[in-house]
Amino acid sequence: MPRRPEQRALKLEITAPVGKAHIPFLRAKLQAAHKILRPSLKELSLALVNDSAMSKLHEQFMSIAGPTDVLTFPIDEDSRGRIISGEVVVCVPEARRQARVMGTTVQREVLLYALHGMLHLCSFDDRTAAGFQEMHRTEDQILKRLGVGPVFAPEAPQSRGRRVRTGEA
Image (cartoon, rainbow, N blue to C red; front, side):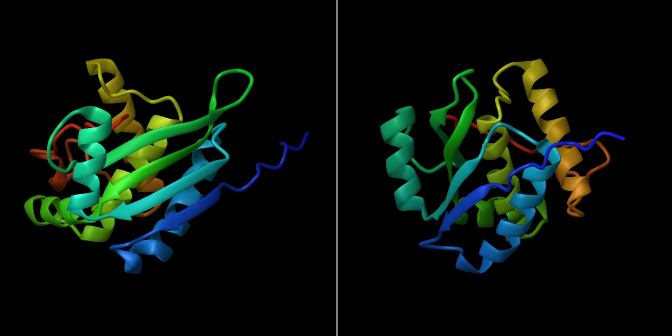
C-alpha cells in the first residue's frame, strides 16, 4: 500500500489582546481542522481583538462602520495562485454577543469565526447561495469531526438566525 506524503503541520501564530484563555483550545482545534482540510495553507496568523480594533479594520478594509465577527486577509500565494499564508482577525466581544443570542459558548463561537476565516483562505467563498451552502456544510463537517458539533445544519439548535459571515477583505 503506497504511503501518502506526510503533511506539514500548520504554522499557527495567535495573538490575543483579548480572549487569551481561548488560545490553547483554538490552537488544538485549528491544527486538527488543518489536518482534515489538507489545504495549501501553510501559515496562519490569528488575532483575537476587541470591538475598537475590529471597527478600525472593518472601516479601513470594507468601508463599513462598526465591528464585525471575522475578517480574513490573504498574505502570500504559491506559484499556482493558492493561498499559502494569511491572517484571520476575530472580534471576541462580537463572539460573546452572538454566543448569548445563539445559546452557545464564547469558545465555540470564536472557533467558528476562526474556522470560517481559515476556509476563506482555503478558497471557500460564501458570497453566492451555492458557495454559502458549501462553505457552511464544510464548517459543520469539520466541527463535527472536531467534537464541537454542527452550527448551520438544520438539526443544530444554534442554526436558527445564524447570520451570514461578512468579513473577507
